[in-house]
Amino acid sequence: MTDETADSTYSNAEIRTIALAVIAGIFFGGVATGVAFPTLPLLDEKLVISAIMLSVILSANRIARLFMNTPAGTIIDRVGSRKPMIFGLFTQALAPFGYIVGLHTPPIDLGVVPVLGDVSLPGVVFVLARLFWGIGSAFVFIGAFATITYVTTTNNRGRWVGYMRGGQSLGFPTGLILGGILTDLADMQTAFLVAGALALVAGTVATLVLPDVHAGAGSESRSVSLREVPALLAGNPTVVLVGYGNFAVRFLWGGVILSTLASYASVYGLELSFLEAAGISGIVMGLGVLTSGSLTIVTGWASDLVDDRTILTVPAFLAMAVGFLVIAYVPTIEALLGAIVLVGGGMGAAAPSLLAIMGDLTPGDELGRMGGAYQVMGDIGLSLGPLLAIPAVESWFGYRLTYVLCAVLVLSCLTIVSLPLLRNPEVTRTGVKAD
Image 1 (tube, rainbow, N blue to C red):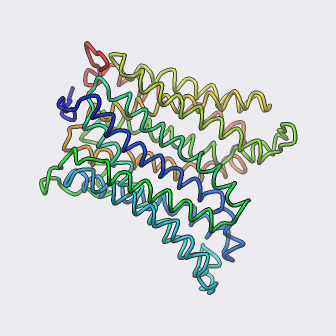
Image 2: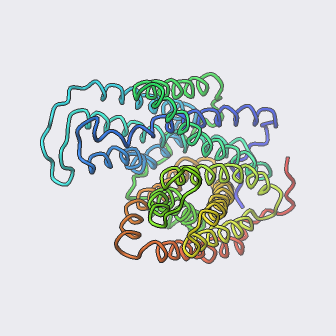
Image 3: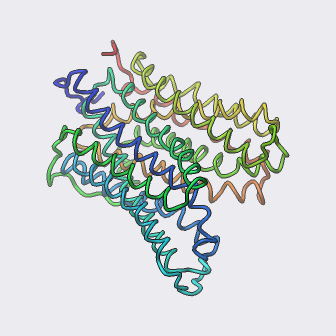
């Protein structure tokens, strides 16, 4: 097994300082994302744009990140992770201020564009702002992965990867709550200002605290484009397995669950006290995110105590599969709450194990490129999820069969990801003792 990413010269105190700086950056970045998000779906009436144009605004950041992941990874391998990550955090900070510019842009009608429908100048400004956010987030995630992986060893990597992913997971729902309250108590502009301020805080914290722990490989690091990702992965078959797990988890959670839960509650008439479909879906998703974030931290720590981190993915995938089957066959509010704990907990348990395995397998001079490839597979899942989930439940299969197919996809991870990795000597760590 390769552990070129580990540098034994970093003490526990140094690792803690570096990791906390990274975690603070991605947490505040996640809060800033969440603060703005409750207001974005309301923009169609505010900006006089079509529903399709609104969907383009909402997905523009993911599209930009999908194409930016591999260039960002190459840059990080060349110059190190500090400067690119700081660049990413401040680039993200431009987006909320771009939203404010969009709110005050004259409502000039640019006409009807094929497929998109009515397009206005403010709508274009919002698309550009979201593109900036996507570009910045590519540098932030891959930079965080490279930094944490470089300063840790196989004995303590899972713990700090878990903390990193936990901070990322918990930042977004924190922002959702804050953004909703700010919009209701004040207005959209106030919510956007707070989002921008928090993103600037994230960049400032990283600038002041984040050291240049990985100087990079200079010009020796060859640039990799998105179309070269399949070839890059073909040369690293073990990483392909880990990437498939990331794709499946992101597709099912960030795609299917978040896209269909509100309509599922409405179709089956689920109610809780005075709450109806929208309120129930919000509570359920919040419970899932909290469960996921908590299990991410616990599982990351636990993965340092076992000889093979892969073993933790088995109960994680099984829990997700059972959760989807419960949603499919028991459409009650009590069952839904229990199922979302299983699905969210399974995702939270699988994610840090997969990411830590990725770090264990990747040499230090390839952390950026392989981290970018890993992120590409996750972003493909996030992008395809909403595109396929909504027509699947409404037109193709219905809710029950769709969720059964989701369970089948999770179970496929046991045979495609868990079983091959459990038999792989590259992943097994003998004589493990957590620092």
